Length: 253
Image (tube, rainbow, N blue to C red; front, top):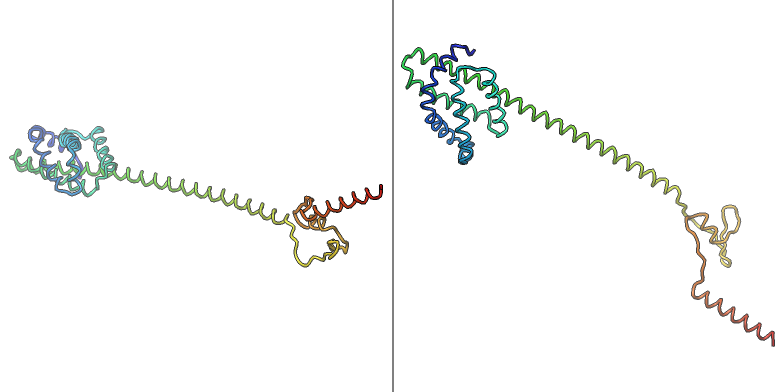
């Protein structure tokens, strides 16, 4: 379905009566769109409706501008990007295009008496609309694929970030384990039966030597001793000292 220069000429010859009926075409088209549930709420917004009417005017007049050059193609590609951005589904777009084509064809029938010219003009319009659909879908799909690629890249980046975090955390945990193992290796434990003198409280070590209790425990654990007197021993020592003082006084007399 190749669009020719003759097709452009045929459509451009219709521009006059299309402009004359443009507002009626747009009104009928929007009324048809409002019957779609997906579009009904969208068209209730007056600001949105005004923008849409303006965009549709430009689109319809563009069909009859007489050329399909760079600016025409750019405009159709932009339509695809806009549809993707606002979330208009492809099937809804196709239904809208068919509705508009049917409305315009009825305008053709009212203004083109020659059946042969009417038929050629209708075919030219169909070719052009097919060309539009191709452009719109091309940009729509490119935009969609771009979003998918961006999402994939983001997911891969996030996965890599998680992998690095896990590796870093694993390294930290391994270091903690090493530190813990070193700490456990440094801990000295007292276990088993310890032979101790019942009178002097010295302890017999592995070499069969007798050690002070404090020395033995210090060598076999992390404990350190700080010497002092308990209240009972303190009183006992004080009484002993007082007894010595009394003996000294008696010896002097």
